[in-house]
Length: 332
Ligand SMILES: [Fe+2]
Image (cartoon, rainbow, N blue to C red; front, side, top):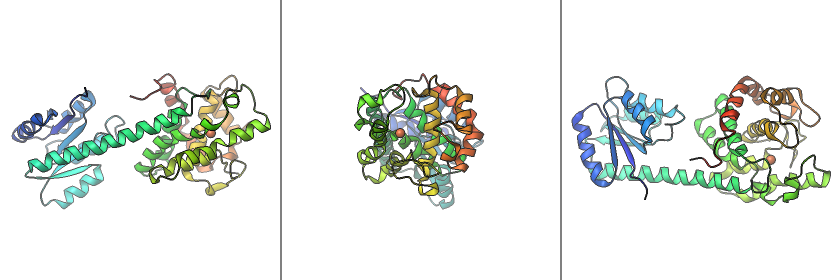
């Protein structure tokens, strides 16, 4: 049986906390309480909350500050927040949206509305979780016959998110690329396994077959608007800035930004792992090949702006690689 949803109620008034607890517990929720922001953040880090009900005006950290702190914390940023505002406070709501709150509830609290808002917020979060899970499952299906397995696809997502953040792109872009970059090689499911598993270089015919994983990937992902990112990445992650890539030979900014980012993330990880480059490179070796080039990789293949960022944050790539190289194949 699934465990009850855990709701953390944060309010400096004892009375309000008791009221919320009295209302939520009989409705099947496991309720935790905190009277200030600091205690709330500590509880969240400890207890794996499913939702936070957050009062705005509290001594010490305000609700807005708590919400902002959550949104910049890798472990807490996905927890939905329902912010409790005063009825007429438009400014507090706007600030709440800016801080990353998911929903708002006006004081005095209408009990029926509270329960509905909680249920809707939890439902939409569960839907998003299921979407993420399915994307990862689809990405993994393509690894069945590939030798570059392990956590390659997840690492490519994480490196891509690092670059996106460093480029100053919106959080939505960063989250999209983190998730949908994992689909970059999904088209390999259509590439014969003797090609995928071949050790050593592919001959020309085999290479032509291999190149088709880009168009196959775009075909598998299809035209759903939520998956546009993944489709462009699957199709264009082997295009090169100087126009020498495939499948279309796109050049420069003709290549979608998300694909230009994934291209470098994918190459770095391939160098760390690949069967073609034997022995696999350590971090410094991979950076050297990318920076100086070799008989197949050239620095001109990459968007210079993204390449400069890669060089600047390369140590973070190494940290991620080390952290994720032995991690379990399926994220929790
Ligand atoms: Fe690929």
